[in-house]
Image 1 (cartoon, one colour):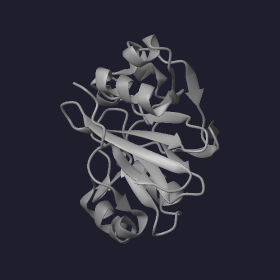
Image 2 (cartoon, one colour; image 1 turned 135 degrees about the vertical axis):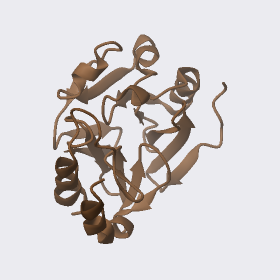
Image 3 (cartoon, rainbow, N blue to C red; image 1 turned 90 degrees about the horizontal axis):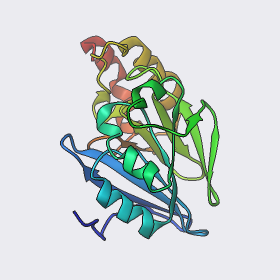
Image 4 (cartoon, helix red, strand yellow; image 1 turned 180 degrees about the vertical axis):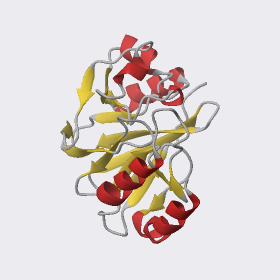
Length: 208
């Protein structure tokens, strides 16, 4: 499938965020591009690698960041690595990429430089032990993978997932951001911290 050309999702003078939805469970894939240097990063090489590779070549992607290691977020990783793109994942989630491979580890509080842009890594265990979010400095953008969605936390029914842990991850590491912070999740629509924060007690009471 050819990559669409109308992928621009958000922008300002310094940043372009492109978004495509791929695969059987409609994963969001984001490409974040520094407009001053043309360098870009792809967040979650989920699926439909032909489309992603075409976008990478068009938009100047130099590396791939994985928010976590679940199968639906990593199907395009082998093709990305074969094409020469470095794939980064947390050490805790790296075993989930044993069959597809990875290149480097991401650490909590790491600052990732893409052109003139700076991403701050935020360890958010709960959905998986090594789930990580990315705060893009000097923008209102927060890429949360499957940790925070419109309407609540990510799924914690997996063997290595934990509801109390994901609630702590969201409360301590994500709900500290301003209300107008835009949440870009691994599936579905954008939301904001201010929209989600008032519902925390409801999520705790329902248990998911």
